[in-house]
Amino acid sequence: MPKPAAPSAAKTVEGRCVCGDVRIAITFPAFWAWHDHSPATRQAHGAAYATFVGSWKSRVRVTKGETKIARFEDKAAGTARSFCARCGTPIFYERPHDPKWINMPRTLFAARVGREPRYHIGFAEAAEWEYRGEALGPLKGYPGVLIERPRKKKREVLPEGF
Image (cartoon, rainbow, N blue to C red; front, side, top):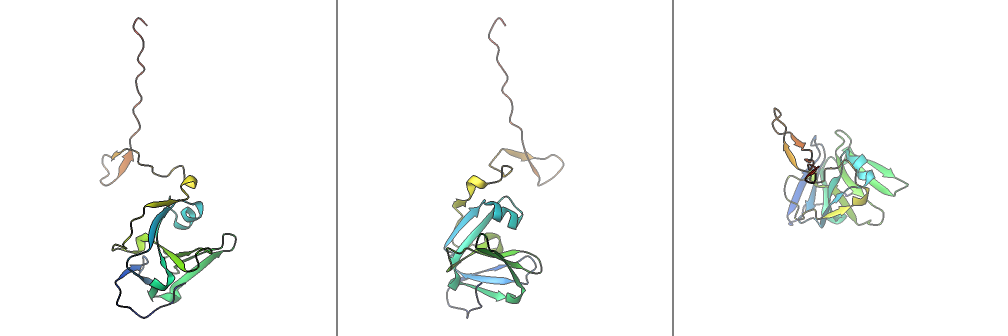
């Protein structure tokens, strides 16, 4: 887990958990960004997939609430996930084959991080119920709610004289 560091002159982007008890800062720009569709991430985030940004650990610091960060280590996978002990917001995701890197949910940051998520990890393991770009339309009587429209069946055309 990153240790608090002295502020530098480099531009930083700040992120925070839902309750605000934990705040982090990364040096701009982040190194990469991607969508993770793997079952472990799906379960940890309670969503179809999570979008992460990654950076060198040396470019990430906790600016508030380091003692409020809880950590779960998955011994079998060798990964570690850190989250706010108060509100449960995921904060860090670490993997053993990348000891100098740290990954953070993109949603922690309200501002741009300098990278767009253009990669998909674990796409072959994606949930079959995950949204895949189906046509959507407004649900009558429920502003802001969209519904998947069923595909129209093609009418069978019978040959003449039938």
